[in-house]
Image (cartoon, rainbow, N blue to C red; front, side, top):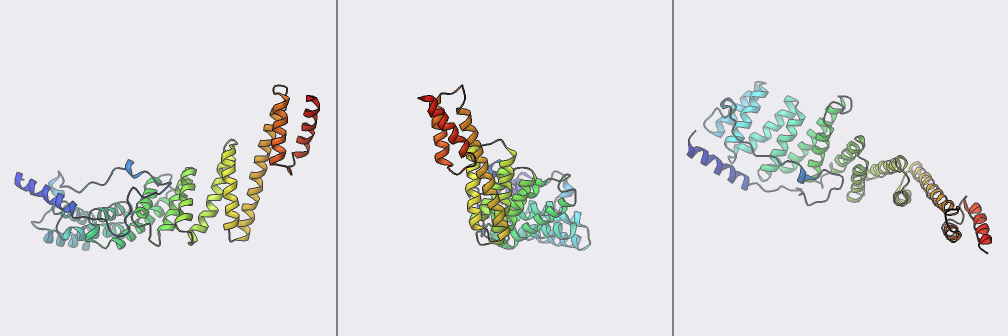
Amino acid sequence: MTRRFLFLLVVSAVLGAGAVAPGPGTHYASDAFPGFDDVSKILPQEKKTLSIFWWRNAKCSDPASQLKLARSLAAEGSYSSAGTAYNALVAQWPSASEAPVAQRELADLLLDKAGDSRQAFEEFKYLADFYSSQCDYEAVVKRMYAAALAMKQEGKRILYFHFSNSEDVRRAFEDVVRRASGADFAPQAMLFIADLRAAEDELPEAIAVYKTIRNRYPATPAAKTALGLEADLRMRMLRSHEYNRERSLRTLSFMNMAVKMAENPEERARFSGWCSEISNLIEKEAYESTIFYDSVTRTRRSGISACETFLRNYPASVYAPDVRERLVRLKGESK
């Protein structure tokens, strides 16, 4: 391989990269997707290059002939060899008109024929990233979504991801949403992302995604589903952690909102019940704090102040009679 050929190859790759522009619906890292992985911490895709193994490089002298070879191998059912031929074309002639065609056919072959959904997703993503202006971007993102669904289904067959990488599946759906958050399948894709977060016990991240679904797609069925699932997770977090007043108040505020938003009577009743549970928890903590100040280790003035504050905030509480008795006793002792 001559130096001149290598130089021309590098120039061709640079020009090919420069010609690529984001397609319709593309979203950038600056877009806010709470609960998604930080894209700045994910290694970006690299452009395909010639292999160090000569047998994996192009067998033909021009891209048109190489594309014809790849197609003939695919038609014969030699999917591995066809994939190698398609890849060689894209690597050797990245700016040729045949390159995006070969890239698309490679991705379709992997998903529809070879049954390699994970690699198919990567190939569709490569097409969207490097040839977005030279392909049907919307159709490609739809195919990315189909590949992500296939990855999810294959993972479910292996004991619910215990022997597969659920992170790859979640990131695949995240990639789809980032590229086309306005697509009709985006809300459902985000539900999958949140569900996978919850399955990995990453509850704050899952809640963040459910909240985004409600805010971005309020009129969709996915938003109604997200409301109930978010409520479930918020209660799960509340019950599994030590008492935290701020968390309890936030959860209560959410549940009050959920009661108003819920359209299903049964769901509304469930949310109302949780409102009562949270309110009782907050009152109980306030009562226990009040009793703490009414002790020999605290001043009567602190005890009186604590009792008065409790009665002012919770006059109808089940603990109110006891607090009133303590207040009368403390005031009597202070004279």
